[in-house]
Amino acid sequence: MTSNDPRRWTTEEDVISTPISPTAWAFTEGFVPEDEILAEARSRAQEMGVGAIDPGTGATLRFLTAALDARAVVEIGTGTGVSGLWLLRGMRADGVLTTVDVEAEHQRLARLGFTEAGFPAQRARTIPGAALEVLPRLTDSHYDLVLCDADPHEAGAYLDEALRLLRPGGVVVVVDALSAGRVPDPAQRDELTVTLRDLGQRVLDDERLLPVLLPVGDGLLCARLVG
Image (cartoon, rainbow, N blue to C red; front, side, top):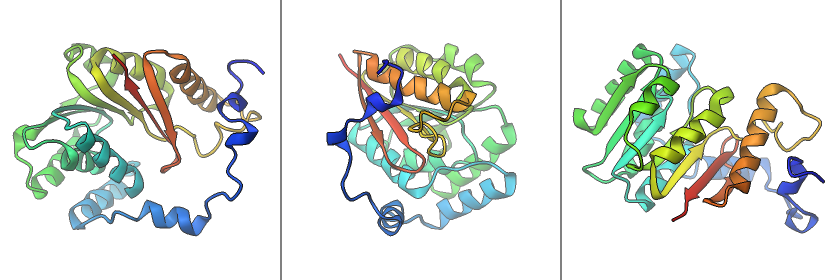
């Protein structure tokens, strides 16, 4: 078995004998309900044809930012503010979310949601532009969490930037890390699946990172920068 073989991710001892049922999965995804403000942000995403994280992923992001007592967070991919709202709700009261998106109109809608949720304007810094042009301008070793939720084909480059931006102990999060369930299947060799599979293996192999792959949404790959 090669180091890039996705079967390396599990062994026979790791296989759960009674996998979670669809009913149980749906229950866990909706365990933390969304309020009207999040529902409005999600509705705007649907109207704009923008993907939005599911409630289970959002609740996990809120938990992570709260556990980190996060003061500074970078979000790659603003969308219409669904993920931003979850992040802000977990961050400390003086925390600032820096969120990057190539679509200025999407960011305008996100700011509308942040205002509706009662967050002061200074709590969210929206920067329009391509992520790989904006991120190099952000401060090294300054951020508690970096969320990667934009072009998955650029996930490897986002990880490079995240490792530079994170403080020791900070966390990088990649959404949709299972690529609609294709990543664990070695027969799937399309470009996007291979990119995300290689990303997961790279995170596993990096001694600076403490990784976990959570079965939330379409897979939530998280890694803590150690030391």
